[in-house]
Image (cartoon, rainbow, N blue to C red; front, side):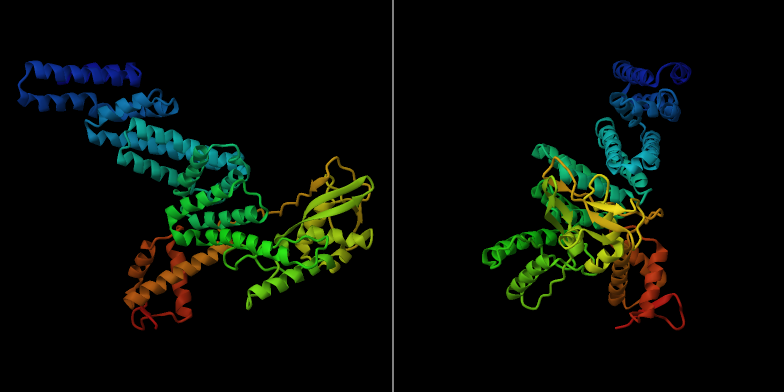
Length: 523
């Protein structure tokens, strides 16, 4: 029978479609097993099975998988779940042949993912990028589950392949956060609780593959802060569900700041209710303050702008109230993060403008005069130059045109003038003034500076912790101990070496006088 199968199937596998050939193998193996049970002694069953499997499977496994026209790649592209399952079951008779299927799947996932990462259109649209990654994962996850019966080796290879291409581009972490930001703002509206949870689970499934989880945390924290401070989150319960999922993945330390942000929002809400109840000056300036705990929020201290007298009076009143409740604490106003609504008088009727705090400071100047130069506005508001430029140009944008700029061009000079556009018209009563985006540098920053600094601190803490326990260690052992630590980011040996040198300079550890590769902990 060995020569028969060698001739029969050696010819026929080249003629048949691979799927048809697999069915014929399956049928022939079944026939031989039936004949063996019917006519042959039990002692020959194993030998016959070995011959049949060698001739029908082992000898042609690689050719069957790699066939360019109807092999595994063709089956994956055409979602031939049943045929791939048949191949898996047949190849499982000779376990060594499964490597060919795994290798094919892994290569195809990497190739598909690399094309997604390198497609310039996907890089322009984070939502499309993440959706295509999710589609790729879903497609091959179905194959692993249904065709390969959740075999551990296939599951591991799929995970490794997804990790490979997702981490080819450092922007993946930022894109995932942008995708989630879009979902939280409007993408989850109108969806059922089950659909919402599925979308969040999809995000977590990609998050697991990120090697730079701390980069995702940095962007997610900024996006969450923006949603909370502008009250632009679709549903707070969805936000809390996402944080609980991140906590389950990475532990309390990863989400402690995020949870602190939510606590600040709730405390501020209660605080404002008390403030408004006891407020003496019921003027036409309504103020709403969110008190942010330093360390929780991704805000940076900037030079405080000069608020209009009306707003300054309201902030002073709140500051006095706050100090009576929290003695010893100091408030620092983050005017660059605030928003305002300003009632403006125009020739054709009043309009309510929704603006940034800096824009409000600019507009309030026009209660005193109709025209100011750029230099005058800068002096009177004390707004940082970079911010003043984009806030002023936003107010003078052709689509908004609350102010008229002369000369009418994008460039700015100290002598350029801005005049209040008393003749502005709009069918809307409430007009939201969009803010011009910050121009990004052409050079892509792989890791945000704040994340880079935190990485340095984490690595140094790990080195000191290890050295404090072991007292004396050679270089290679110390490197190995730090690399084994649970990190939320990928780290290169050169990065650890630089942190060791820094700790030596600051006298946390020292080199051995006789062996440069030996370190001692300094108490």
